[in-house]
Image (tube, rainbow, N blue to C red; front, side):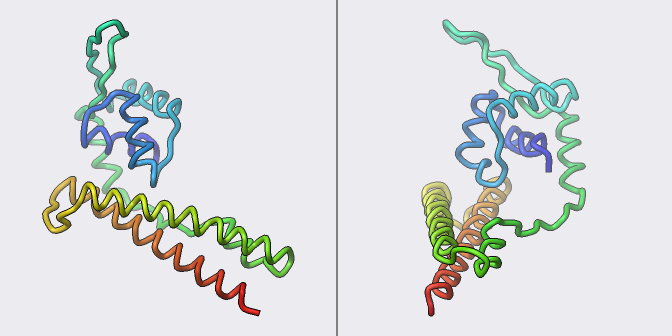
Length: 178
């Protein structure tokens, strides 16, 4: 997936300025596709040149005009093309797994500490996902269309983080056992 497609999805949900897109990436989309402020603006410029987005200049008091981007018909066609295109299944690729596998060649206590550190980070993300679920999706059965799609991605994140935390617990238990 290219950043362009993540931006097209976001703009398809709601038109936004580059700043607003950056905030969306920080709050939700960034959980599964990261981009910096500079990357978003560079890609928006390229997408505008390709005709995938259109821009509306909105006047602001005492400030430069705000550029609000939306998906153009060409952008919707590109997004539909990309969505229909088969993608490669994701591989689990993590330094932590390699460190665990190689634990016998180094400091086992350091590997254990790394597992504990990763577990804490994933448990924190899991808590954030569950808080989003409670706040934004209290009635799980009521979702349809784009809201259902957002919910399903969130549920995938919850499942992945739950599994990672459980795996870290399993590894910690095994490494602590003499």
